[in-house]
Every structure is written in structure tokens, then in C-alpha cells.
Amino acid sequence: MLKSTDTSALDALVPVVGQGAQRCLGTMLVFKRQASWQTEQPDVRRSFDLDEPTILKRWERRLGGRIYQVYEYSPEAGWEFFALLEFDDLEAWQNLQQYLDTSGFSTYYAWDIVALGRRMG
Image 1 (tube, rainbow, N blue to C red):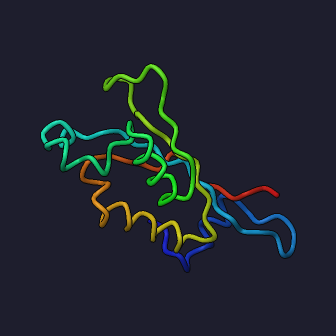
Image 2 (image 1 turned 135 degrees about the vertical axis):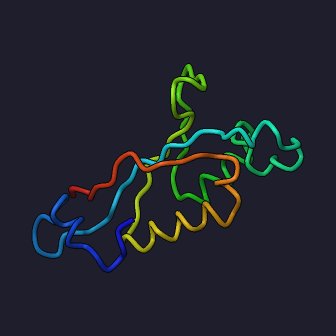
């Protein structure tokens, strides 16, 4: 994981264009239900059930972006959900990663970062 003070690696990958350019970071977060989803009682995992519209909206607010479900999903196909998110800096992104772990989200969902980049304008 990149440290929030280590922008040199990110600058080399996605340089800032122009003086005073906004440095917002964008990422594509992908995730799917883990095996623990099936073994847990429905009332215990309810606050993580993205098929429930009110729970989905709550997690969208927590993530700060929309969550999309992949059409024609099957466990063999790969990721079940994705979200496109923006952050002011790497520290904000790291805070969200920590939140996913401490909130219990990582207990029920395996997740990964598919892409990390800078806003172009």
C-alpha cells in the first residue's frame, strides 16, 4: 500500500497536469460475498445485505459513491459488485480501507482495487 506521504510513485504513474491542478484520486473497488456470507445467520449479516435497497443506500453513503451489481453474476465469474470512488488524497483512501475492515464489511465481502488514478480535469 502506498503511504499518504509517498506521492512520488503515484506522480510517476499518473502525473499532475498543470500548476495548481486538482489532485483527486479515483479508484475502482470490486467486491463479492465471501463464504462467511452463507454460514452466518441472516439477522446477523442483515446490515451488510446489499440486495436490500435501504442497506445499499446506507453503504453507498459510507463509501461516498454508487455501488453497481455486475449483470449475470455467478461465483465462478469473478466480482459481484463494483464502485467508482474519488478521494482527496491517499490518506483518505487508506482511511476508507481501514473502515471496510473495522466496520465488518471485510468479514462478508472480499474486495480489491482494480484501478487507481488521478482526475484529468
